[in-house]
Image (cartoon, rainbow, N blue to C red; front, side, top):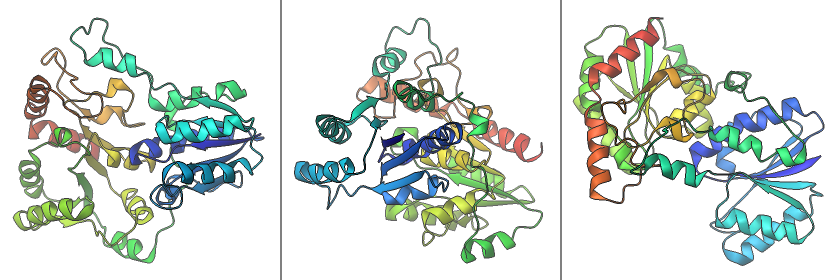
Length: 346
């Protein structure tokens, strides 16, 4: 069986698709998968003779309706038995519809928009944990007779990355120090914790720790440079390294401190322990870090019943902005340092 799987963004969502693809291929030996995604995300997926990455270029080659038509024509020539859309946005819908018109069976994952919306609405009676996005992805394959027993511990990358020369030189410097990564940014500012400087001050006072700051793009780098000047004992993760080298380095961290962001999922993917900070969003909505739920830091709904006030971090009202700020402000530096200490000393 040859299936096309569509998932070309966002980075965190593609990262949590990687263990799903891994599990499907390991469980179903007759299965071949062509994954439609951005070339940037190739390092997320373990090499497999039955996995082929088909690069999508939505800015140039596959831009607009005619570009998608060109893309669909190329995909249809692959002799597909079906298409599984685990993205379900306008572009992916267009692609799968074009393939259906060519006689190819299609399946799409259920995002659970209404379920998630109910958990952030005023009436939160019966507040409960929803299915993880990985489980929703897997369910989309059921119509093709493919099943995988969802076990997050089985889905972590099987083998560590081989290190590039640059990363190997960095890793060689690690002795008895514990390495802590801190990724203070998120796609939505409401998910960023403002007490990072206070945390760095506490960590800098501890012996035997080396802190690395993670961020991408010029704006984030400028903010990190300012933190570096304020806390000279910290290190900036080199922006010159590419994504696969970033994953290589992450697997050598003792702990990664992250917001509800893609870095949380990237570190989880390579088996690194993650301490994740949650405010306006909530892990019950299906985006919790695989194998790292024990590292979640959040304010209980008994203390702040208004949580969550957003599904992804976007805030549309003054009330939601107020709740989001309060949900982050109530998280103390001590809560984070305590979790870090228990992790690196266990």
